[in-house]
Amino acid sequence: MLLLILDKLNDLVWTGIFLPCVLLCGLLLSLRSRFLQLRLFPASLRQLTKGGRGDGVSPVQAASTALASTLGTGNIVGTAQAIAMGGPGAVFWMWAAALLGMAVKFAEIGLSVATRRRDGAGYSGGPMYYIGSLGEKFRPLALMYALLAALSAFGIGNLSQISSAAGAVAGAAEKIAPELDPRRLRLWLGVILTLTAWLILRGGAAGVGRAAERLVPSMAGLFLLLSLFVLCCHAQALPAALRAIVTGAFSPRTAGAGIGGFGTAQAIQWGLRRGAFSNEAGLGSSAIAHGSAAARSPGEQGLWGIFEVFADTIVICTATALTILCSGVGIPWGSSPGAELLLSAWETCIPAAPAACFMALSLLLFAFTSVLGWALYGTQCVRFLWGEKAAAPYRLCFSLAITVGCLVSLRTVWAAADLLNGLMAIPNFIALFALSGKAAKYAEM
Image (cartoon, rainbow, N blue to C red; front, top):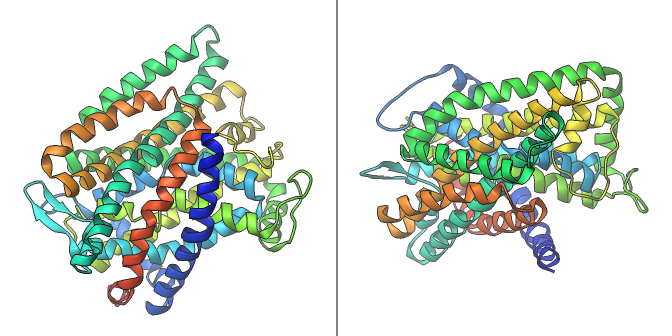
């Protein structure tokens, strides 16, 4: 019953509110900034060669933290669900979401840097600050955003991530050592990850930034190498997969969805929905990490937003989608699969045990770095709401939730996380529409 209610609410929030807002806002920002995502894309890539450390979290560490939160199970599980629920055409709409999302995320980060505050813990920024900059009458919306984001962090950035990773670890253990009790294994995994997260989070934004700066490049690189290997093994299927993505995005009905097939509406809904879950454009979350950076200007830090969406959706999610579609594995149309769909694709070229181990490692690293990033987001939000005294209890509760995430059902967690994500985006979009002209000026470089 709870799952049914959550699904109905999700359809209302995502189809009726979020999707029109992200499309209109992305288009408005693109037009007002003369398509900054295309003009400034080379400049965003050049950011990778810049170091720069200053007073507080460095720009690279802030970007690594933001990428740590976005490069999560949404890239693997979310992409698989988009295909299964919306057909191959959903991948095209994930690309569309990424293109518009680059402009949205640039604006979020730029506005966060421009309106951030300095306190004893360093810089603090995020949507709650630029929403508040609109005037005292918008203060309730800023408080609403902070509260929803602090709660949402437990869903999108903790329980859903860890639940997927724990399932992958248990699945790998079953193939290697079937005598192990999966429930006990999940419990011990949760305890170890909880303690590790707590130790890192005690270092605040700088501690999270240092950990993310080390983990993100290596885990993304290893994942891409394996995906490219599997794609090379199925290179002859690549043209057909690309055709299915493009035709499925615009066909009234696409094959493979059981009785009626998927229509364009399903492809759009699940492509944009899972694209947003993956790259977080429109949620405003990454702007919280960038608000802590020792940035030289709002526009320069905003360039990282373009690169983050590109790396997350265009690179990682596309690699996942093409691996699944090219492998020829059976797709459970109309369902919400987990990591097992990509694992089956890997197993067409790699022995089952090594593939399961690498999947477990990938999901574990992706999930854990997402946990660190979202822990920072939630902590900044509760500091905004209740001050520094609320930070330590929140970090403790967030760390303990990791153990819970190792033991809970995945389906209900994803539905609850989806709903909270959609709700927290509403006050963020109100501010983005109101401040679109100011944000567009940051792209004049």
